[in-house]
Structure formats: structure tokens, C-alpha cells
Amino acid sequence: MAYNILGISVGHNGSAAVVSDGKLVYYLEEERLSRMKRDGNPFRAMIDICSKYKIDELIIGGTNDELENSIMPWTGESPYIALIRKYYPKITFTWLNQHHHTLHVACAFINSGFNKASILIIDGAGSKLIHDNKIDSYECESLWEGTEKGLDLINKSSWSPIKTTIGNNNLDNTVTLTKTYEAVTTYLGWEGIEGGKTMGLAPYGKQNINIPKLFKNGRGQKHIFIPQYPAGAIINQELNPIFQRNHNPKEWHIDPSKLTEIEADLAWQIQNDTQEEVAKLIEKSVELTGNKQICIAGGYGLNCVTNYWLTKRFPDLEIYHEAISHDGGTAIGAAYLGWKNYQPNTRFPKQTSIYYGPKYTHNQLESTLKSYNIMFKVYDIKPQNVAKLIAENNIVTIFQGRSEAGPRALGNRSILYNPTDPNGKDYVNKVKNREWFRPFAGSVLQEKAHEWFDMAGLEESPFMMYAMDVWPDKQEKIKAITHVDGTCRIQTVKEEQNPHYYKLIQEFEKITGVPILFNTSFNLAGDPLVETIEDALETMLKSEMKYMYVPELEMLLEKK
Image (cartoon, rainbow, N blue to C red; front, side, top):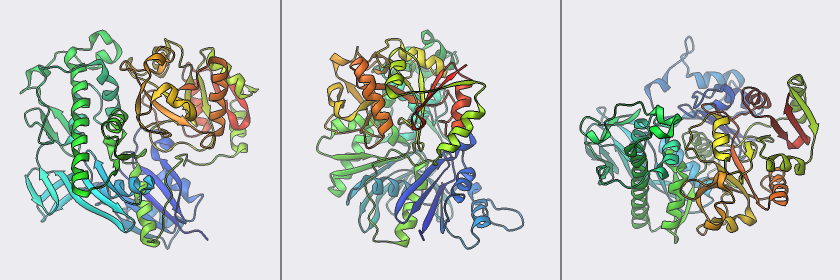
């Protein structure tokens, strides 16, 4: 019988992962089931797993927050242990919530397929560590070396009220890299964790000599950034009059005419300066370890603009950007470490797919669709007919297979549109109720990607981790997905990775000559990606979207 290890991450982006006989077989974030964005405490995901797998061991990850040690009445157990025990009374468990960065490291290094590499964790605030029972600190950036023998910490930078060095951990009371990005994101009117929006705004700005230098010695300038660890950081407007304003930034989220020069330029500056700081970390890692293979994870690792810039900056290095870099990925790291402890000599394969969500049978899909037959017409359909609908500027959602791990929609839970429509970006942003400036991604046939995008030496981008330059002569042809700076975040698609999606893109190319589909996540603004067919249908009903394609059933739904 298979030996199954369940790893969980209990904080924001709460998630659960199962490694079975040395193979990652399941991953799901709690928000997909609870429908609460970035939800923690992955109880529903754990229950779903327990209905499918016999769990032999539980590994619990988090950030060592005091609340993570809360206990249940009567038994005095952790709620996570109590839940699993009710299914499997003899379960063994391990707490790794004091090792947040180690979990990021394990996820990235093992998924990379490298035998030896340096691993950079660029995070906001990892585990809370207490030194000598008196000094609190929060992990921020760390450098590790991974080999077949294990993971070794080289050095770490942490935030602490006191500036000191303890072992190979450098404590400082100034704001670290990711928190500066969060501070700017907060200043621009979003939650600090929504840095992807700042990244999208950055190309609307430029270098501005009136904006003070943001970094000194790899840390945010003290007179600009006020730390609020672990929650984040804010900009000190009192000491920096240039950042003072008398309007609500949310006004320009809706009306572009309200966007000020300083707001746009600050977004540009933080994107530019943080990627320069990451480059310094990479140079330091090569200097200290000599490794030419680098893994990057932690929250900042999802910055696809920086990821592409680094690929061009360091053509002699092989850099792996973990697709599940955010805290959800620590559940995978926890399960991997549990398995390595159980079977130390296991060699994991390189990650080639991240469709790890729950499986749904044809009967389950058909039964649900029947219950919605009052609201939808149902047609038998072929991929060429769906491609024609998209080519005629219809939004078509797609629901198939197991859901994608991480924050990117990769053709199983996607909203699709015609990338050649010059008004496509504005139209789909309006339908999804997103900010006007937000760009969209493209899914391209892998063998045609080099014809449309400067791949910077990369052969593929299967997990949508790079915002690549669109060749200048192609930009007007795919205007809906070409950002204002001439880039597009892309997913390359091979037939063996996703046969239904690959076929649909092929059929779209036959009609339009363009081997690319406009692809965005199947959700509305503020909602998690849809997980179940019910989620998908309910999202359709509360939006302007009219069509949904279910390729496994060769079926198209049209809203009545």
C-alpha cells in the first residue's frame, strides 16, 4: 500500500499537498474550496484529501505565529492534528512552522530537477524566530545550497527591532526587499500582498529624479519606509512630501485621468530597483557558492517581469523560477521534506506539470450540468467551432481536468478571448471588473513561441513565469495581450502537457493565422479561481460571460 504524506501550510494562501510513494499527486489551496481569497487553515482541502487518500503522516508548515499554536478544547490538540486524527487515529505528525524558508527551499529545489543549486528565498516575512528568549526576528531573504545530500543554509537576512548578527543570520531593523514592494503597493491603494498590480502599473511610469533613492545597502531607506512586521510596511509621507497627496488612490483605479505622475513613477521605480537588488543577491550567491544553477522562490518569485529581466541579465546562469513561489508552495515543501525523511535516497523528477487539483468524473460533471439546464443551453461541439466563436470576439471560458496549482490559469480554469482584438484588454477588464491598466497573458503553441516572442534563450514557459518581449513586428497583431511596454506574460503549450487546449489553439491558428489565445484566470475581480463546475457556472451567471467550453465532454454551454 502506498505511503502518503500530507503537507499543509496554515497561513495566508493556506494549502495542502500529498506526496505518495515519492511523487507529488495532489495540491490545492483552501481558497478554491472556501471561495475566500487567500484563505488560511486548509480544513476543506484536508477533508477532500482524506476522502481520497489514506494519510500516514502530517507535516505542518506556517510562520510560527503564536496563533498557529492554538489548541482545541477537551483534547488540547492542534485543530489540524485533531482533524486528521478523526480520520486516522494513529497518524504521526511534525511541526515545521519554525522553518518557513526551508519549506520554500525544498519546494523550489526539488521541483527544479537540479542535482545541485543555490536557492534564493525572497520573502516578505517568513517564520518568526526568537533568539536568546528576547530578540524577535522575521525571515526575509536567505541563500541556501541544495545537493542530493540535503539543504544547507549559507546566510539569512531577517527583520528585527535590534540590529545584530546571530550565527549566519543578519538581523536589521530596516525594511527588506519584498516589504518595500508591499509598501508601495499599499501606497497605491491595494493590499500589500497584491504586488502583481503594482508590477502591471510600472510600465506606465518612468524614472523620476524627484523620487528619492529607495534602497541603501540592500535595505529600504529608513526615512522612506516604516516597517510594520510581520504585516508589511508603509511609506513615510510625513518625511517625504513628494508622496503626500489629497486624493484617494482608488479613484484612479477606475478613472485613469486621476493617476498622478508620482504614483506611476513610483511603481516604475520600485519594480526597477527591486530587480536590481535581486540581481545583487544572485551575484552574491554565485560568489559564495560558485553554482551556475539558481532557484528562486518566496513571494517575490512570482514577479514575472523581474524573472524575464534576470534571464536576460544572466545568460550564463540557469535560473529556475518556482511556479508556486508564494506561501501555498510551502505545503509542497513540507510534504517533500516528510518524504525525504522517510526515504532519504529518493530522487524526485523535475516538475513538468502543475495540474494537481481534485479529479472530477464525467458523471459528476454531467450531473451538475443537468441541474443548471434551466439557465444554460447545451450543445455538442468540436474544437474548431469553439475557435471560431473566439475568433469572432466572444469570450469563451474553459473548464477541464484538474485545476492548476498556484495563481496562474493554464488552460484548465481559464477565460479565453481573441488576442487580435485591439479593444480586447479594455473589454475583458470591464467584464472581470478589474483595473483598466491590468495586462493579460497569452497561451502560445510551444513550437511557434520563438516566432512571436523574444524567449531570451528559454525553450519554453509552461507555467507563465515570464513577461517576455513581443517582437516589434508582432505587437499590433496581438494588441489585446501586448502590454504598454511591449511585453506579454506567456504560457507555452505542448500537446502532451494539455492536449485539449493545444488542439483549441491549433484550430484558432487555422482561422486567424495566430497560434496564441488570450488567456486569463476564470474568476471575477476579488474572487479565487473557480475550482468546481458549480463555481464555474455560478461565475458565468453573475457576469456578462456567455459561453463555457467543456472539452472532455465535447460540450458548449450558452447562457440563456
